[in-house]
Amino acid sequence: MDQKITEQLDGLLEKYTELLLGESSPELKEKVKMWSLYMHISKSMPPLAKHWNDTYPDAKESMKEIIAEIKRLNEEHRSKN
Image (tube, rainbow, N blue to C red):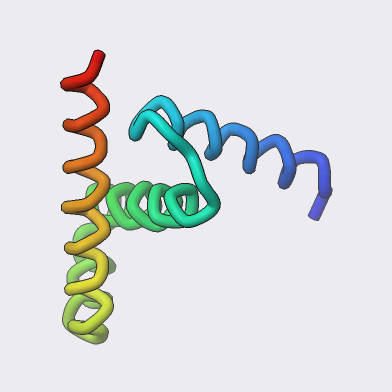
C-alpha cells in the first residue's frame, strides 16, 4: 500500500477526531476509527453487524462502551462551543 495515502488518511482521521471530540490522541483516534467503521457496517450491512455481535458478545459490550464514550465526549465538546 502507498505510504502517502496511509499518512494522508491518518491526518484525516486525526482532524476528524479533533473536530468530533475537541481533541485528538492516538487512543482517541483508534476509538474513533473503530466507532466509525462499526457504525458504517451496522448501517450498510446490519446482518453482518448482528452476526459479529452474536459471535463476539464481549466485543459487542466493548463497542457499546466506545460508542457511549464517543457520544459523551462529542456532547461535551459541542456544549463548550
